[in-house]
Length: 187
Image 1 (tube, rainbow, N blue to C red):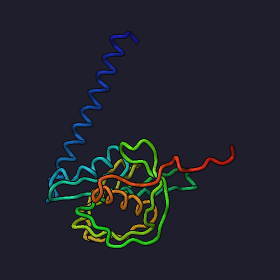
Image 2 (image 1 turned 45 degrees about the vertical axis):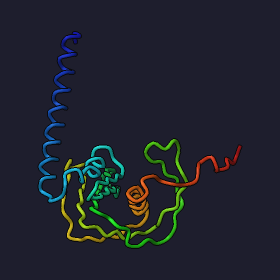
Image 3 (image 1 turned 90 degrees about the vertical axis):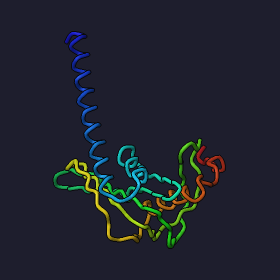
Image 4 (image 1 turned 120 degrees about the vertical axis):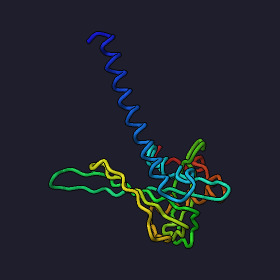
């Protein structure tokens, strides 16, 4: 293939990707308009969809947190599976109760290294509103729904993530012990 043809094909591929990105962004805007909350409150959900992970947002009159709960679905006979992602957007969340202690390493934002922190094993979250996005990779579908529940209970890593993001809303930065305090063994 000649250099000019290669550039033309590359340009067309980039244009097609750009067209898909514009269509997706337009669909996001239509989706946001369906809900009666400020558009910027959706930022954590959109970041979770696009970049992965969990996010929090705070403005003068609204706080939101998005956390992702992943479940691996696998068919042993077909040797095929996928990770189903359920992203919960909590509007003005409050940790109603916490249970248990789990020590874990976390890295967040501009921190240079991971910190040893203590998180709850189980949390009960109360929120003004909960919006759930279910991402199904095989069907290439994202289903978004406004849950009737305003209170949910999580255990394990999703509970840790909720506690982490709500800590951002309250304290802005995560505090913990430095990785440098660990002792390396087996040397």
